[in-house]
Length: 85
Image (cartoon, rainbow, N blue to C red; front, side, top):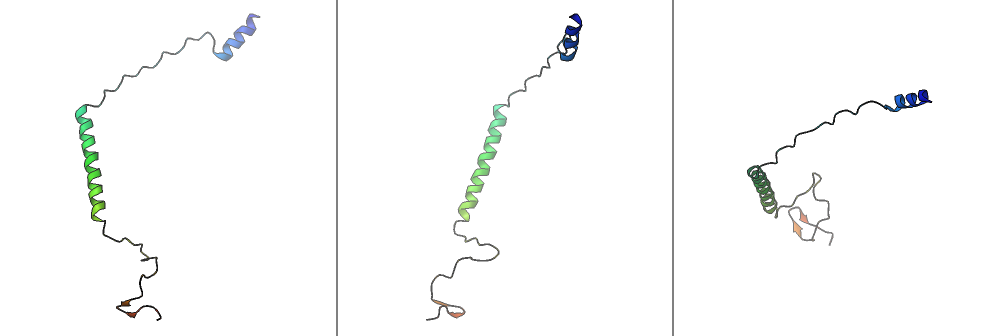
């Protein structure tokens, strides 16, 4: 029976020593000054985006195809009267 045990041990790697575990050194935590600098830059970027959005508040943005809705109102225009009345 010893032959069968040796055969099974050779299949499953029995009798071999386990490899040494790999150890890693911990990274140093970011310093508070670095975190504050990053937070400040993110805050400034958000303020800049908000300011740009406010400046665009009165602007009508259209697609390259122009306005997709119908004309509002049936008053006079530069090309004459709009509407068939």
